Length: 333
Image 1 (cartoon, rainbow, N blue to C red):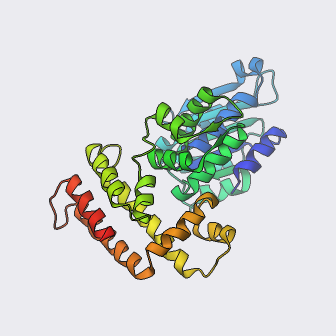
Image 2 (image 1 turned 90 degrees about the vertical axis):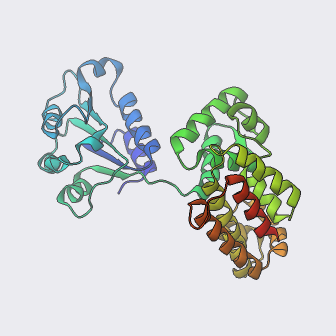
């Protein structure tokens, strides 16, 4: 299975594979690779006769093979890109004979989004041998802030840890959405500048004061007044702040606090890596752990489990506002 860096390195070195099968849940990398091939493999003059865009909902596998077997005109190669290839999932196995003997003068690209091939089948095994097979997996949400920082670094822009967490909370782990919003912010501030919570609030509409990051911070500091103020705001804006998301984020937060008590590591750098927490926040976690010993955290985790069920209607039929208020009361009591 090829890596993203390996794929780009080989394309830039003109070491092109006859087939690129790009599949998986994370569409950002699928688009990134395909768009690069579409933009750079052929010159503008060559594209007119030698670059074909097909759509899985409009063609059959046999149509694609027919296009792929054609010879390029006045060029060394042709490019055939199949978008929405996931629509061919029921017949995609018909590709196997072509995969075993692909046209070397064709670069055939499949954008097989939201799905993956069955690893037990012959097509998957054949693609491993003669093609570039790339599985674009969703990254875990706790890795997203670091991903945002690295992406912006490549654009000569920095971001504060809090701003990165705000974007993660609001956008989740959909990299395409995240990049879209980051590009907007880059246009606003320009290169060699920093994205702050204030800039995120002004340009994307995420409150820097009323978000799950601030809620977990207020709970960790036993700040009752601020915690209730935040959840009342959440209850008034349920679409932006679904209860189930808050429960999930708080569960991860208190799970990390529990781990902090058990790892037996005191070095902040090592703790940061072990807990998966940005080094900027590690001292905050250490301070909060004094307010929440292991026994108390166990109770909080059980409380979160109970209110997760209540939010889904199990033995409960109360409003979001009451759910939030009860949750905060039971965490801080």
